[in-house]
Image 1 (cartoon, rainbow, N blue to C red):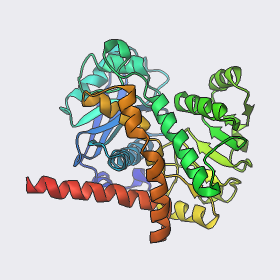
Image 2: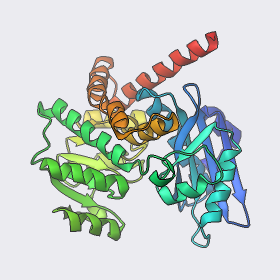
Image 3: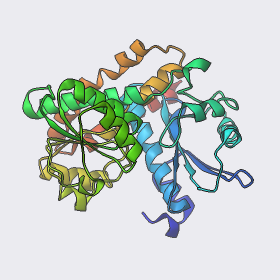
Length: 360
């Protein structure tokens, strides 16, 4: 979709979002977009991403895709949250200091709880702490102010158990020992995922455009670094995309040399139907991204509803293992790709909740 050449309200009508808010403070250099996709199950929750978008249209396209994915993520996980997301357009000349983030927190607060923000690419518990100075509608707060801290370890754990579940579906064995796994993107989530994989005895290969991230991982573990230009087409058992989305398209899929794709990145399929079907044709198993990376939002959910503990969060993440196997079976039965089967399952829960809500 070329947003730059399309009517804005037509885009929003086709995307089925409930609300899109544009936030701007010229003096502070703040340009943000908050997208609320669906609140049938509860208030929308999703992180705030900071990225150097090519232009505003790309930022809008990204926030619409991400917020939709959050709706499905919360629904399929069985938690009572809706889907929302925010993006901040990064500008190298903008000083994103305490007051920048507090101003952004004021914009979030004006939505009166319809959107709850959290950490994402480009944000950390430090920025979340600044945002929390201006609004209560924030999750993933640092431990010292009563929050649950960085949700990345929980996202990584969900991906890890999903990898084991998927590998068992393919080979009959859940152990990842001696499997060749390429992790693309070793930021917060990717680093925690590598911890699990090394402990399991896998042969781990890593790639990242951030040299500092690579150093952290290679200093800690025996891993092999792969040039980012060689990631697509690298021969491995499991490819784990943990960076940005939309990397799976007709051109990249044709070059893949793996049996399983199971990673933390959102919206890995550029087009869910077309690209998911192409993976099926190539006999490459795809673990639906919005299910397997739901550990972070589940962690935020337990904080939001006031029942937080690590044990409580893990107890809500563990069912992903069996649910993923159920989705693979459903996909085979319906003769659709796993992403479509997962979307159908998520939509069914939302529809049932909507029926009940309308009867109250």
